[in-house]
Image (cartoon, rainbow, N blue to C red; front, side, top):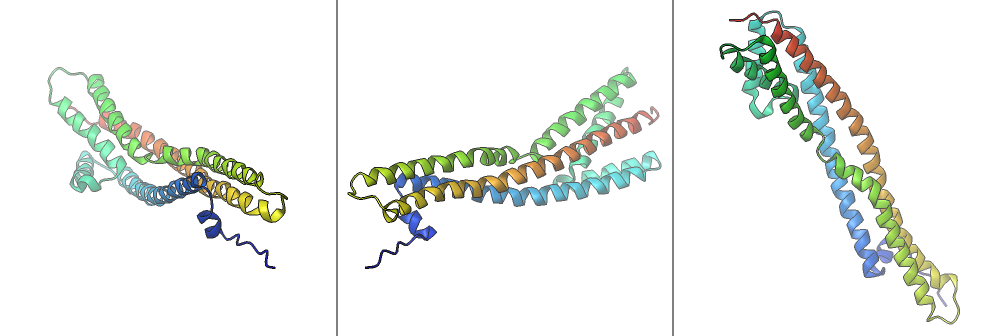
Length: 229
């Protein structure tokens, strides 16, 4: 007599209760979106870092006001393809040029307007850079509990089924417990990459934010040195 039980993942999934199957599907969907956002952030942060380094290098090589105009005109010509730091500095320079054309404004008032314009653009750009990080954090923190819920539900069903069996054996219990534990495994599979990615990207975003703020200060100092027309 053959007592062999199929404990493959596919068999356990197809024979699990509806509630456990829904939990597994939810976790798989969360894991799929996590990996999509992870790869998006890899390319986004890498591209932003490269554009920032190029702009910083060009900014350090500035010699005259004409060079600054040329640099910012190049940033304006890039349009939507311009880097984050380019857009921040360009917004500040446009506000600087607009306020300088208004008579009676002091240098402090002009620079305060420049600072606010750059800060507003900085906040908008950082919102884009940080996009989807909250999703990764949520998946990393919630997925194990969702998987645990599926596990508890599956084990409850397994032991409830034993009530109709005269003699409980390992063969009776093993499939139900195995299908329940699959939910926890999938929950960890979804959570671990999300947590690692969130921590890694958060450090990268913080470094970029510090570079943006430092460059904003340098750019404002440069604008202050431009003589009045």
